[in-house]
Image (cartoon, rainbow, N blue to C red; front, side, top):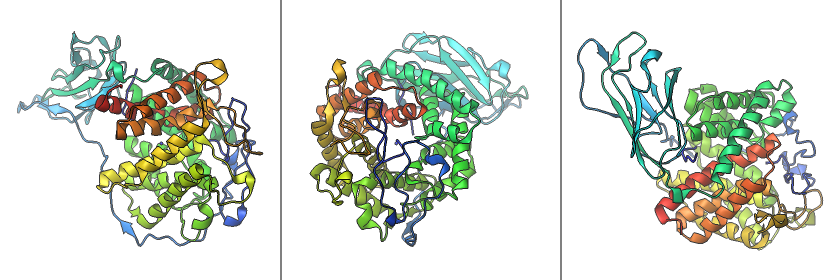
Length: 520
C-alpha cells in the first residue's frame, strides 16, 4: 500500500513511553516570560492559555515577499483533438496521482476531480480506466462531490507504468459530453524501494487511524477531544488520505481535530503554548479545501505564541531545553511562508542559529545550564529539531539559497544518537529503539528504550541517505523504522499521532533515495 505523496510530542520536556520512561517534566524557568514547561503529568496543556508572549519587537522590517511555489496545477495531459460541436464542453480535470508521479503506492486508490459537476451515471469503468503492463485494471468506480475514484481489485505491479484515462463518455450533470479525453501517467514504487515492515505499518495506519478518527468524531468533552488531536491529528489524517488516495473519511477526522484546535487558539488569543504549535494541519486544510480562515491562522500562529521573537532572548533560548519550542517556531515560520505570507528573515535566521546550537550542545555535552537536572539529551527531541531544519533547508533549496550548515549538522546529531543511545535488541525482540533520555534524569525519565518515539527520529536518517548516498543511513533508518512499527504501542491517540506525524516523510525520502542510489 506504499505511497509517497505527503506534505514534519509529549507535552513536556519529556515524553511518556510505554517502555518504562516517565512522562514528567523538570521544572522550567519562568523568568524568561515563556511558558516553556508543560503539565505532562496530565498531558492537559490544552486548557491553559496563560502562556505569555515576550515583549521583543518584531523584525518584520526584514520582510521578503517570497510566496509558496507549491500550489498544485492541473497535471492531466489533455489530448489535442477538440470538438467544437455544441454537444460537448471543455472541463478541467486533475488527477491523483498527478501526471508523471513516481513511487506511487502499489495498492492505492486513483482518482480524478473536475471543474464541473458530472452526471454520476456516466462515470463508470468504461469512462474512467486504468491501464498497466497487463492491460486494463479491474476495480470499483464511484463518483461523489466532483471526484471519481477507482479502487483496484488487487495490488498494482511494483515498478510499472500506469495510465489513467477519462473518456468523452463522461457527461456533465446537464447531459453534455466532455470535449476531450484526459490522461495522466504514473509509475508505482519498485519492490526494492519498500521499507521493512511496510505492510504492517500500513495496516496499523488504517486500523488505528479509523479508531482514533472515530474517537475524535464521537468525543464531546473539550479537554478529552483536545488531547486526542495532540501532535497534529489533522496533519496525520490528511496524510493518510493522501497516501491511500482517499478523501473520506480521513478529511472528516482531520476537521474534527481542526475544530478543537482552532477553539484552543481562539481561547488563547493565539498565544499557544510552545509545545502546542502545529501549523501543518492548518496548511493542508487551506491547500485542500480553500479554507481562508486556516490560512489566516497560520500567520497568527507564527507571530503570537511564545518563542516567536528571539531578539533579546538568544542567551536563554540557546539552552537545549528549549529545542522543541524553537523547532516548532521554525516550522511555523516556514508554513506561513508557504501560505504566501512574507518571510520574517531576521527571526527565522536567529531561530535556525539557535537550533544548530542545540545540536552542538547535545553532541559536545557542553551544557549552558549548570543545573544537572537540565543536562540531558532526548533522542526524539533531536528528531524534532532535525525535521524542522530539514523543512527549512528544503525551502531554502526551493529559493535557490541552500544553507551549507544543515546537512553536516544533521549528520552529526544522527551519528551521535546512534552511537550513544541506540539499543539494538529491545527485550530480546530483535528490534531496536533509542533510549528515552540520557542520562536518567529526575522528573524527565530513564534510559529505557522508547520505541513509541522511533518514527519521530527515522525521517532524518532517510533524508541523510537521500542527500549523501551513504548506505549506513539507509541501514540505520530501516532499523529505526522497523523497530517503531514492531514495538510501538498505538493504544493512545497521542502515540498514534506521534508514529504517523512524520513517518510518511521517511517512506517518501527513502523511496526517492533508493530509486536514486539503490538499495545497497
